[in-house]
Length: 293
Image (cartoon, rainbow, N blue to C red; front, side):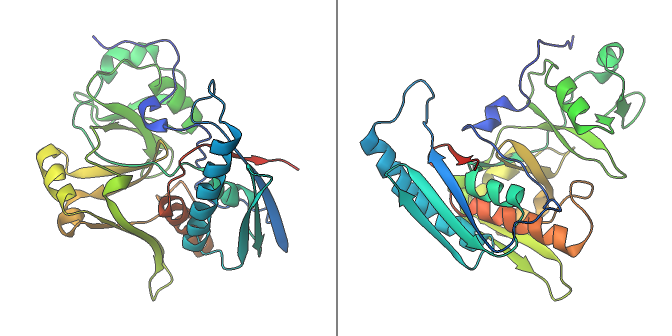
């Protein structure tokens, strides 16, 4: 019998490092001119501070990876430098939204490809415990998911559902609002990714092109079921896209911004794609944070 648990974080096994930043679209406010971002190196374990020598080593490594990220994110004029051994300074010219830039600079870059699972909690048994604003969808006798107009409301509810057949996540629903997804174990991680770059078609549509090692197709085929032939692309604990498994036959997939998560304009779509490409360009080996001025 399905039941609710005490509050916990949704997709806790996916979150990885601290300071996960999940910004899907550029906000209106832009920082113009040449802007400076000061970053501080954190610790892999909060209770074990890094030694000065280790902090300096990580700072240099992070600086190199941030350069790769900024280049992949389409930032043309920038400079990354290490200050006093453990603080980094990033200067970038142009009109960049600060939330967008913060995600490019600090999100861990942890990637997982997870098949969608046909297994679901017994939503009918949980109906009496659902908060206001959460609805059962997908069929009366065998509902496939729950829905809410509020992402926060749905996330809080799913975080309390006891479910032993996978992980529960939220994703933009067709027609608006947010729906639940049931995710199986990962069949690929960042180590299986061979390339990730943002591209724009002749019609002006921007997407992220991902290429994986050939072994991913075999693992995906073994994990797929007859009921579900789709997989979730999970970045830093958040489902950023759902793709058809048939597209992975040649080990390549294209990601476009999910409807409802970002605006429909080309600028919003482009901002989403380049941010995702930047975060995937180089994973961060240690948490970092932006120091507020």
